[in-house]
Length: 259
Image 1 (tube, rainbow, N blue to C red):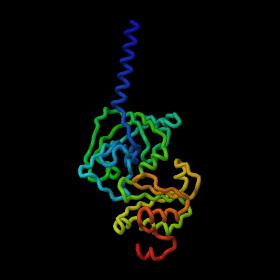
Image 2 (cartoon, rainbow, N blue to C red; image 1 turned 90 degrees about the vertical axis):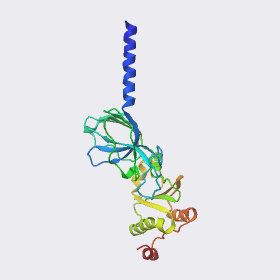
Image 3 (cartoon, rainbow, N blue to C red; image 1 turned 120 degrees about the horizontal axis):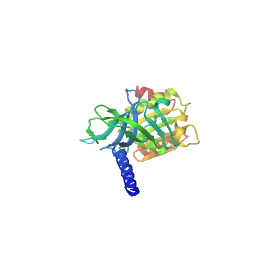
């Protein structure tokens, strides 16, 4: 009798594990949606594979039959959020919406049985949230967000594409506008695509473990290309590696050329 009970308990346990696996989605947090408490989850696509990249800022050459697997996740007040870094859990009704960083690794137990769904798109999945399946989260397990996650999501996919980050709260604002306009025109003028991004240093320091501020970062299709606190090194790098001359601060000729 004890053997029968033990076997029954084991079967129930295995059945529960199997059910959890069938109802668990794993992927990367993308962004919140207009529906309160809802967000989009990236699993994979035919352009970057399982590596989620934020593609909105650069011109992309998607495959002819571009496909993506993605889901819309709806949370309720009863959804449990578990921070795997601290091991702490809380109901969503007890905390502010806890997801902020794109590309954070998530495991999501949903109420419904999962039916894998891949959709053909004409635009990158980062620009498309319609008509993907909606699942209700019972529990969200969030892995710690790392510098590697930040680098990966912002790394360009194609050659001659660059992401430029300026983490400098004292950066000249007029000069920043010129750099931004230069970046938006660089593709047409030089065949080199540059997405200029400005953030306050504390955004960077949260997970990039830097000692120097200000900091400037360039990402190429190979990943981190240069990180420095010397802006002139950034200008020199673009001249040497990308073959273009970046505007100089205080040079009025650039304003006349760009505007």
